[in-house]
Length: 210
Image 1 (spheres, rainbow, N blue to C red):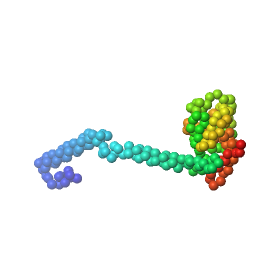
Image 2 (cartoon, rainbow, N blue to C red; image 1 turned 90 degrees about the vertical axis):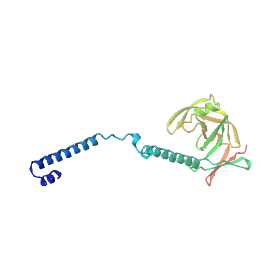
Image 3 (cartoon, rainbow, N blue to C red; image 1 turned 120 degrees about the vertical axis):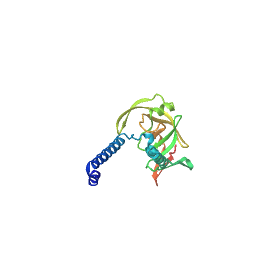
């Protein structure tokens, strides 16, 4: 359109020369523009705005903070409540929010966090727990579990306590798999010394008469 308009306004050789000059000038400008576009440097990471450089890191930090908060809330939510001790040595264990019963005590010389399981035949700990508690030796055995047979051993004279209740000569199985290093299963080799009742989301253990 520029060249056509120029042609309409000029006649003669002088006009053609001016048109050719205008055409050359436009062509040079176009070439310079294309060269400028092709040689423009690509922005480096250092040239990016701060918000773009730190955006992904901020997302990761926020995500970690949220997950950490959820973990702490979950741990607090599932934290076992304290065992109440009534006159006569009666123990009352409140049901945890996950529907299980938990208590603290000792197996041998080591502190334990018990999962109370009335369906388990004996107190059971992991091999790592047994090593820390000094529970050595015992009779080799095979434990029947939902996931199959499990090699372990049984000790027959181990002191076990839960709260103020202490029982000596308890059979303890070694071979518990999973869980934290200080966790143990509190089974019937300890619980059979008590009369157990379940009511109102509580487990009550009353010592049997000797």
